[in-house]
Length: 471
Image (cartoon, rainbow, N blue to C red; front, side, top):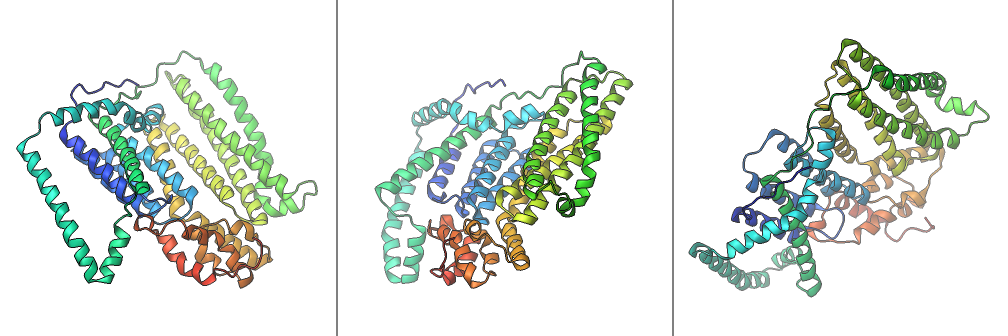
């Protein structure tokens, strides 16, 4: 990846955008892993990037909207692990929005371009500040005077209005942050972090890196050199798929009727091996697509036939892995890890479907964007479906059928699951809601406000202090 740095210092418009984003980060970022403050800061940063970029391109809008949608999940979901995943996905999507990328390698580099640019942008921004300080105009002086007058007016009238009305005073207490040494240090740190990140975005927009999006080099391999190992793999997978059909459609009955097979052995261990096979085969497919020749119609026929057969057989393996994990969850209960790896396996199945579609015409320029876009979109759908609530629903339903429940695990779920856990009988309800109650103690500022926590608050308060067992 080549990156030519701009010769000119950062212009005043860019410096203003960086300052606005940094101020928003200092004011609005919450102390908790989730909260509406993240969405506020993301919207301000998106507006700042727009100030620097000007005209928007189609893929900039697509990736940018996806990034904002992922950040928005922090205003709706309470689960820390889900918030971290959404924020990482949003950062990757935001980087792709300004850096672009078409090939798989180009998109991987594009997704981290802003992180690299944040370090490289510092000298560029410092030169811009130096140039700005050397050309102070009368207009700038008047603007500074106007800001100072505004601050004086606020200092005079805000205390008077707060003293005149108690409700207005309480509103100010919730909005205006506490002024102390720790808060000042936190504001400085947050301003710096967000401003540096916005500087990286601005550098990528102003002087975008050259990403490796070239066409693949011509291959010197013969058909036999790649078709033999892939053909052997196809035969191996075909034999495995033939054996799997009995177990795949037998499900629970197959396990119960096979004396030497237990639920844990059948599902838990087998799932991870099949997941590894799915991932490793994807590497094989990528290598074949990259290096296999396609000069003649015979070359293309072999490529379509073998990769198509391999991908179809992997779909059987994906179905088998999902069947095993579902069987295991039906027997032992749903957890975050089990549901997450199921969702990941489903996405891998979608990737193989896209590979089959691309192989029909041997045209895959759209495939890298589709793979990355489906991964980030899948993460968004996963967050929208509210995984901790789904887990609680299945475990509560399982309890109603079998009277088996793991209250210890349910007590680790957050506010997302609270409305469902409230349906448990009193002897389990309060202890299962311990996790949601713990989240309520973190922060009550407006920046940390969250739909799930607001919904769970009355439920937690009604059941606080009623836990009589050791969850």
